[in-house]
Length: 118
Figure 1 (tube, rainbow, N blue to C red):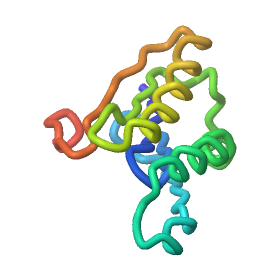
Figure 2: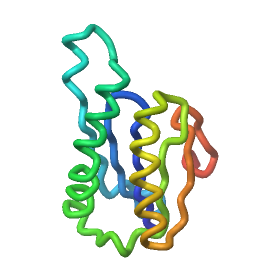
Figure 3: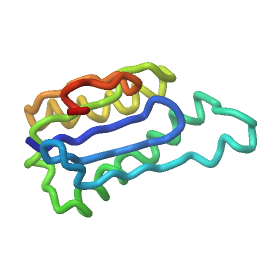
Figure 4: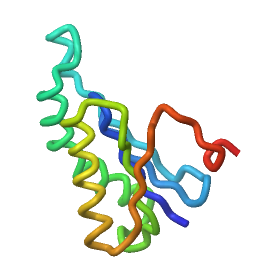
């Protein structure tokens, strides 16, 4: 079971690829733009996610040696978080899921689940 996970709840864009419970790759882009405002600006965060998510997913697939068609499951942060940022990740993951006819699950990134912690 190979899972591609996407996290865009606030101001970091993160992508991980797992084979069962083994992390094959985990990449993150930290948005530096917010430092000049003293906090996260939601609209800027959403736009940064849009500009970075494709390359981050593509680089993760390439560096892990996993073909997109080999992904069995897509996971994406469903909350909590900034709605615009969450939508970027969800729409990206939903598009991949729909196009490849693979399942998509939403994950609360603040809750630990027994399936992942055991």
